[in-house]
Length: 457
Figure 1 (cartoon, rainbow, N blue to C red):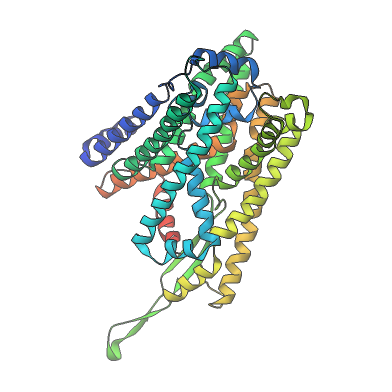
Figure 2: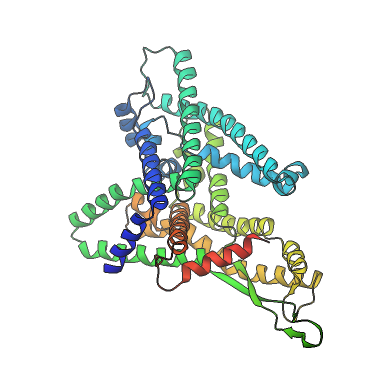
């Protein structure tokens, strides 16, 4: 405890780090306040009553509400959150793998290319927000939560503008946090939205277990959540180190020149190189059946009458989780193949006059890295699939569905990844000024060093 207090004092002593943390907290507070500012013409009490009476607590809209920190069910100006920007970023990133124009912008045009990609992403974000905003307003109107005295034209035009402005403002907040704060701004906005619902779900679960006389069960649930979180940390930080050696160089001149031993290092191949993207893609596909059914059947239709659609709209059902697990495993391989290019590693080693001991440079090196990546992706994809369906197992053991979502899936992976990244940045600020870091073991330093090498590939 004393060391933790000393570390907090050291953080406060560094003016730049202190200002960055305070700025980040201020921006996050503004984002949370916007989650309670209701759209004009919407009755939040009526919307809440309609949602509680008409919706399934296990449906996917509940997950979307969790990602926005409750703003979705509040009909707030941040109801769509930062998700349209995330969707636009994913689309632009995928276009970079498929279209030569976007490939040139990503790799060959440097800073000007990145600025163009940023502009394209922002414009695409506005377009996606307009489309999703129309769908969201249709959902709110179908719930009977709109003041009937307001003309439809005024309601639609004004609120689509407000929703688009809210998303653009959230995007601006994320960029400002990245530039002037600590951590990745967009990721922090998503994490804050997820964490915002955790205290409420935790209290509700505690009260429900007490009424059933099972306080010990609640303690066991917390222990299980801790174990799952630690396992997620292992999969996020786990790497396979491929040793590399740099060619020997001559030390001295003339007759006194002697060969110096080559430096040894390693290539860090992450066990989960795809990160949270496979779960996001798989979850997006799982949204499609019920969404398409609603549009085909028309407004006011009830998907509960179809058992298959009901299963796909319930994240605790068996068919949903079987297909969800398979999609996560498949997308993990696909996304890893897109972002891990063995040929780039081989060319980088050749430029640095380095090699993998026992492996010939060039094609043999690329084939070796590709084989290692394929082998470590298998356990990584299976573990990622298990984490993605873990909330269903938690719900099956009697955990409240709202609290069960924190036992795995996108929410847990995002929280773990963002927290580790933010701690690493704070740790770097401390070490740069010769203070003790946040951890004793040096693991965080090792992660920073490994990421630096991997970034050059």
